[in-house]
Every structure is written in C-alpha cells, then in structure tokens.
Image (cartoon, rainbow, N blue to C red):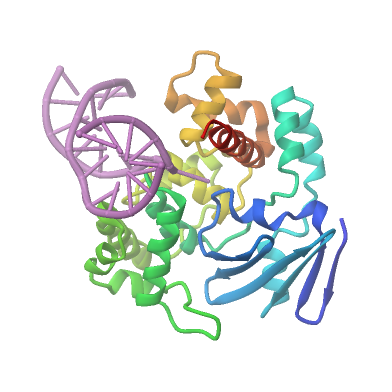
Amino acid sequence: MKVTIEGNNIIVDSSYLDIADTLECGQVFRYTKVSDKCYHIYSLDKHAYASQQGSVTTISCDDTSYWYNYFDLDSDYSIACDILGATNNTMACACTSGKGIRILRQDATETIISFIISANNNISRIRSIIDKICIKLGKATQYGYAFPTIEALANADPQIYTEAGAGYRASYISATAKSLLVDGVPDIDSMSSSQANKMLCQYMGIGPKVADCILLFGYSRGDVVPVDTWIKKVYHNYYECGHRDRDIASYLVSIWGEHAGIAQQYLFHYERKYRQSNNNSVQ
DNA sequence: GGACAGGTGCGGT
DNA sequence: ACCGCACCTGTC
C-alpha cells in the first residue's frame, strides 16, 4: 500500500482508505462532514482534514506522525480481507464492500468516555453529546475544542453531562472519570483481551459490549467482537447455531481469531448499508 | 403511542 | 449465575 508524506499532508491510495466508510462505521464520533468525501476529524487536541479525490485521499493535519498512527497506515488489511473473505459468501461480500475501512487507533481515555456515552444510544446523538462536552470542558484550539482532560471530566459537575444530553449516563461518565483520575489510564499490556474486558467492566457504564469497543478502538486489540444489535442480526441471519446472546461475542472470536475486530467492522458496515438500502427501496 | 438507537445497572430468584 | 426490567432522549 502506498503512503507518502509531503509537508503537512499524508497521501494515501483510496483503495486502502475510504474516509467515509472508516469514519461512519461507528468507531469514532468526533468528525464533521464537509461534503461527500471531505471530513474534519478531531482527536484529543488535534485536528485533520481528509479529502478523497478519486484514487487519492489526502489527510492535511497538524501532526503527520500522530495521524499516520491514528489511521493505522502501517497495517496491510488485504491479508485479513483474504482470510476472512474465504470463510463464506456473506463475509466475502462484506470484505469487498468495506475494504476501505480501517480500524482507527484512538486515545484510550477518549475512547472509554465516548463509548460509555454510546451505550443504548445512536450515532448522531452520541456525536452531539460529545461535541457539547468538548465545548463545555475542553480547551479551545485553532480548529475547535479539544477532548477534555480526565481531570476536567472528573472535576466537572455531572449536571454538565446531563445538560449535554447524556441522560442517565451522566453519573457513569462522572464516576468513571473520577476512577480514571485515581487509577491512571488502564494498562492492559499483560492481560488477554478477555481479561481486559472483565477489568474494564468494573468501571461504571462499561459492560461487555462497550468494553470490547474500548479494546478494539482504544487499545488496538483485534481479537474482540463488540456485539451490538446489528451484529446480533448478522449472527442470527448468517451464523446462527444456537448460542445465547451473551455468548455470541466469544463464538465469533473463536471463528475469526485475530481478525475478529475487522470482521465485525466489515459486517457492521455491510449489514447497515444493506438494511438502509432496503428501507430506502421500501419507502 | 411504541419501538428503536452500536446496553448497562440493579434487584429478585 | 442468571434473568427481567427500567432507563435519558430524540426520531421514525
């Protein structure tokens, strides 16, 4: 895969990075769409602008090494695509459809707080809540507001989160921010992904699904499958073999192994796209 | 009106 | 350990 860095620009072959599919498959919430294939993206106190012109995607940014890592540009996804695509026809279609998706390497703390907000919620509301929290508690930067520090989040009146629209999750954000301020960023280096999942579940507002999202998007652990309503549908439609809902994640990891996370992303993308086009054709 | 949205915490068995 | 249910809030 071809990546070149010229000054403040990272230039990537679009066949390996579809910016819309990557940003809009639910792994990240701090982005704004400028036009069809142009997005502003925010992470911590950093900003990038990505635009896709045909076969070339340009990432203009303040810190090329940060965003190079963020977009996981060292990884070759064609290997996972080939292995997964050979497992069955549905997966082959999902891989082809989503081959421009990359798993972003996001900041662990930002991911923890963001996915507590994601629980039983929808993407547009999650984005709006996080945006309001950044405006309220984040440092102003040249391009917008930074994600708040854990100190700012822990010390804030939980009312701030309620006003941002977090609902009953407000107390979870506050409690977990306070815990993280005491504990520091959880260090999972010596743990298996399932051990790390159990550890993360001790924080308020984190259950098995949110913990898997944090591991996949905030800790780059590929051997997890966050099972949401979409993946439940995928399981029941294409992989059904008698598992209870809470056992679906470990079953899918047993099939997909180290590629489980990206497999989940391909199928999530595929199922949503399919369902959306279904709805459109019905209406 | 009720279901749904990338679920979790809680109380009762 | 394992259910079943309530839950902020906006949208369809």
